[in-house]
Length: 285
Image (tube, rainbow, N blue to C red):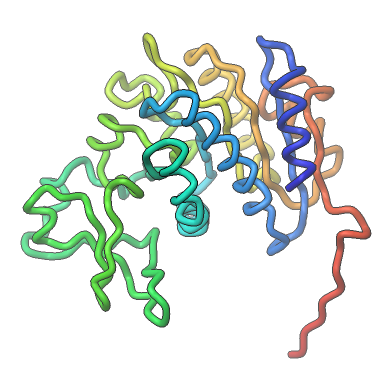
């Protein structure tokens, strides 16, 4: 995490204005790559909100598949909640996150398509000790147009100042962190109702930080299509963000990531575990 912060600070202060920069984090499964990204990301995000409290996407988290997005949403929300007290003191509000993919309902009417039924929200679980129940958007809250999640077991609630539930709310009050897929980015770059979420449009500030998870999967046709998509997005948004990639071990990771995001190799920093940072672990089967 400390080395990511140093790389982030270096690129934000020394990279050329008209070029994207990058940090690629390479480590094995379960090594804490995601946490290593979000700790510095949330620190930077709080400072950014303190300078300008406008509602806009400040970190764009892109995933190749929605299943991977679902895995990370809960962890990120939990880390945001650990910063609630500090965020309220510094900015007067909490860090808000949202997801934008196929399952995201357009509005409360769409969520009511199954009348009198609760809508499950499988991106979060209840955090009440000894509960871990599933979170639902209750039918009565949907009818009342209240975007609030409640645990099916203990009724613990998560309000709209933490998580955004519908596409309409995303468009009206964009979250600080937006979880989406490369397919959704591709589909909505030309949609004038939603492309401001990606920093496209007049008087729209593009997200300065973009997370790319599972970078090692962007090979072959998928990698080429994603590379062109990112370049098209940067051109439309007139943006040159700092990309952070999370990946399993890659050969010549700096070159691979530079080619993917359209940066010069010299503007990409590789972060990987050093030998003295590794700990031996064993398991019995």
